[in-house]
Image (cartoon, rainbow over all chains, first blue to last red; front, side, top):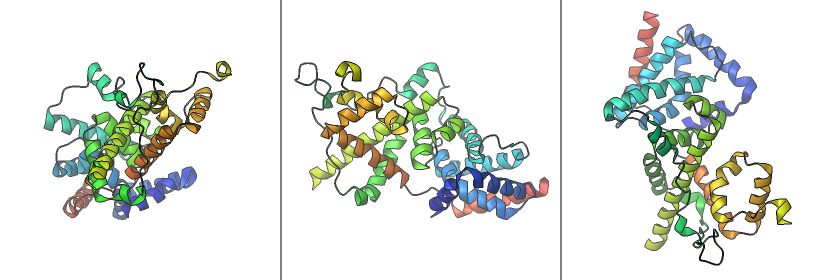
Length: 230
Length: 85
């Protein structure tokens, strides 16, 4: 439900959204609680989704979201509308969540090597064994081609499938997770995603490609296993 | 003919440029090679379809939300901010 509301607002196009947003911001600056509730309903779902990707529990994620809203309120006079409101809020959340996540998990700083791994530049999208080798008749062509997924509609929305999707995403490097969450789960454009995450066009695309390829592979494995069970 | 149109695309190449294809950022010549390969390859058609279904399935994940307790805490914090500011 909330997602549908959010996407209605998000899809309403370039001309109406900024006006609505500006009205909302003006009300918020005056301390209007309804305006705040509206913003929280609209942006809450993706904020929670992003927060959960960085910290180990729902309780901490909720604190991160709360801290983010307070930072938004305290910074509201500085927001000049050069970026969209949601990319601004997202970048605040990511700062908060990354700091918190590092404290909780004691992860290493973001080094060059780590960045290479995050982008997964060297990983193939599909297991190389699926293709014919130079010794075969048609090198580079499928040796074991993907099967057609039948009755996808019901299957793809099944509880079991959701679990597989979320597990696959949880297994991705964090940068890939952020990109696929904004692009494919929340339906953001490439431009907004780049802006919120501070990525170049190429990085955004490479991260999305690796993430999608791995999630597809996870679904494929899942459906193959299901077939075996049947 | 193939010299003008560029070398044929292989399946293993196609799966690596599929995101650029879907994003609309694949250069025109590669886009044409992609299309020609796809027209004659059932495996890659299935792959492209799986990729689209994966994206659609991600878009249908239920939204996350704050617990009611966290939401009322948030509103309390808002009122605190309003009084303070």
